[in-house]
Image (cartoon, rainbow, N blue to C red; front, side, top):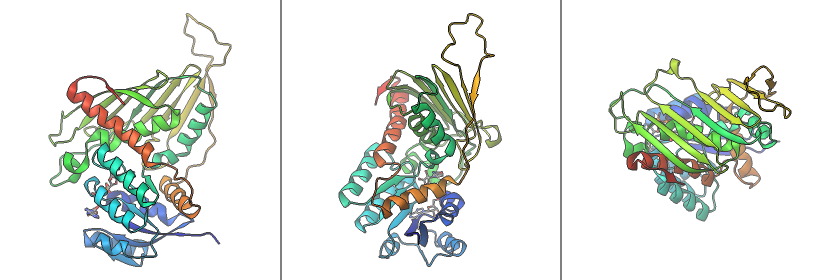
Length: 348
Ligand SMILES: NC(=O)c1ccc[n+]([C@@H]2O[C@H](COP(=O)([O-])OP(=O)(O)OC[C@H]3O[C@@H](n4cnc5c(N)ncnc54)[C@H](O)[C@@H]3O)[C@@H](O)[C@H]2O)c1
């Protein structure tokens, strides 16, 4: 019989109820025992919807349940630090939503605290589980695109001003379009290419919406091998007009992904390469392009995220996405903010 990890959930709002809990229901090795939200109604609604045994409005009540082995924390970012500490003290393993903390200092405190408490910590960068992202990482590792020279990512949505929305307050969310959305694209470019970012130039600002987080941000990045990357996110483009796109170019070819930067595992991938015999061509002929088709089956990225974390608890093995890895992506966003404010390049 498959062993199942007993889970508790802290924060039953948008992402938990919309994606992660439905994903958890499909996981072979997970069982949802209790849900908690400071909004009692939200907790009760999830208890009903996912047939959990318990619903709480206090974190301590959920953490007091000895049976719970792992918690998924999907509360607003300003709650993460205190809730991680409470969960780690209670000996629970933790899957924490991105970004880990309000800033890199908090994120490092979170990672350090879990390390010292001896509990596992992983981060909700679930797009790493998209089959196309994993397959492309493999192909790039095998040299299918040659040396990577350029990488881009766009992830955008419509996020108008709303009264009392924690995401629109920098001291509660840590940042705007870059921190909320681009953190995924930055993380994916690092994951897929296997390259690290060494230097950053950022521009952030508010053009349409006047909340105190940026409604648009761009980051230029220099990777460890000299490749140049560009990532942008907007909160001021309608959802239907958002062209979620990842593009990776190398000395032998390119990969272009449409709509894979998403909460749903889907989209398209196009991989083109030129064979090694192609030399300089003053006509810049594009007719010799060959393509690689990718055989992969779509699943549910949230199910895979929960299954991977449960697996690491069952076998006491390494988590798929470490806090240290996620902190590197958060450092890039933070450096982009500093770069924009100081109008200079920032080394990572
Ligand atoms: N990985 C992803 O796909 C993804 C997508 C969206 C959001 N997120 C992340 O998930 C987290 C939550 O975002 P959201 O969009 O679900 O927010 P949300 O505002 O929709 O939901 C947050 C929920 O937390 C509850 N809450 C508030 N304070 C709390 C506390 N102290 N303890 C417990 N619950 C509390 C609220 O009542 C609400 O139900 C953030 O870190 C966000 O960045 C991740």
